Amino acid sequence: MQDIKELSLKELEDKLFSWGSPKYHAQGIFNWIYQKGACEFSRMSNLPAPLRKTLADNFNILNLTLADLQRSCDGTAKFLFELTDKNLVEAVNIPMASYSTGCISSQVGCKIGCNFCASGIKGFKRNLTSGEILEEVLYLKNRPQADHSALSHLGRQDCQVRSSRVDRMVHASAQPLTHIVFMGTGEPLDNYENVLRSIRLINSPQAFNIGARKITVSTCGIIPGIKRLAEEDLQIELSVSLHAAVDKIRSQLMPVNKKYPLAALINCCQEYIAKTNRQITFEYILIKGVNADLKAAQDLAKLLGGLRLAKVNLIPANPIPELKITPPPATQVMAFKEHLFKSGLNITLRKERGQDIDAACGQLRLKYAEN
Image 1 (cartoon, helix red, strand yellow):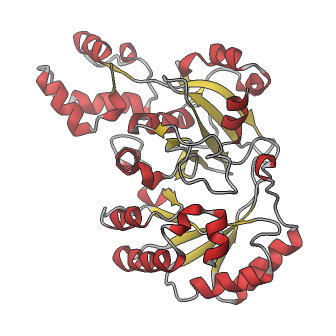
Image 2: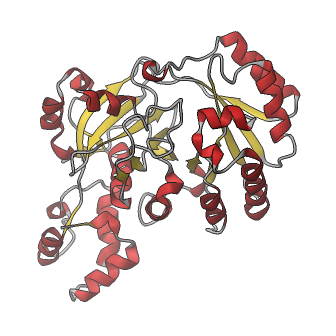
C-alpha cells in the first residue's frame, strides 16, 4: 500500500482523475492531512464515501510508531520513532516563547562518521522516504493526545502500546510549529531527492505552509549537493557544519573533509552566496581540547573573513560518553566568541537545550540499539 504523503498535489490530482473523481478533492485531502492532522481517510467527512473507501484501499497515511519520548525541563521534547522495517529514527521539538522548531532526520544512521556525533556510531542503514520525513513533521505539528509525560519512564513495548501509531493527533502544542531544521540524524544532501521533495511540501501553501526562510538544511559540506541546491530557486537557509578551520583538525573530526577539503568547500560557499544572494550559517561545535582555543578562533576568523553573507553559530558540544566528547569551560567559549566578534564576523552562540536528556543527535536511538 502506498504512502499518500509520497505524492505531490499534482500527482494526487492525476490519481483522482484516473479514478474518475474530480481533481479538486486532492486539495481537500491535503487540507485534512497537513492542516487538520487527519490520520484516517474515514474522518475526511466532506469527501464522498466511495472516494474515502478507494483512498483507504490504496493508500495509508501513517507509518511511524512512537517508541519513546524524553522531555527536558526546558520544554525540549525528543521523539524516537520506529519505522515499518523496525529501524529507529529521531525528531526533536524545541519550543520558544511564541513558536517552536522541529529538528528532523533524513536518514537512518549516517555514512559521514563525524567523530563528535552519535548519529553514525551504528553505521548507515538507509535513506528516509519523503513520506517518512513528512510524517516526522506531521507528528511534531499535531501532538498526540496521550499523556506523554510518563512515556520516557516506560519500556519500549509499553511506549508503543500507549502511542498506538499516533492515531489521535490533536493540536495540543501551545507553540505552533513554524520552523523546520534538517539537523537530525543523517546528511540531508546525501538523500537529496527525498529531502527536496519533502521541503517542497513543507513549504507548499496547500500543505504545511511553512515559509522557505524558516526551513534550514544542514550539511557536512557535500559540494555537489550545495551546487545543486543553488540551482533550486528556493529561499531556504543553508547551514554548513565546519567545526574546524584547518584541514588537519577538520579531517580528524570529519572524514568527509578528505574528499571535500576546506579550500574547495569555501570556494563552493562563495559561489552559492553569489548565485543565491543568501546567507550561509557555519556551524562550529566547540570541543574541549580539540578546537576551542584562541589559535582555533584565529584560524576561523581568517578562513571566513572574506566571505560575504556568512554567519557563525557557536555550539558548546553535547557530552557524548561513547565518543569522549565534552564542552569547553564557559570562559573559553566566551573568549572564542569575543575574538570572532572583534574580527568582524557575525556570531551567535546557541543556547544549550535538552541537556538533561539524550540531547545529541543519535543518542536516544543509540540507547535503544544497544538494548
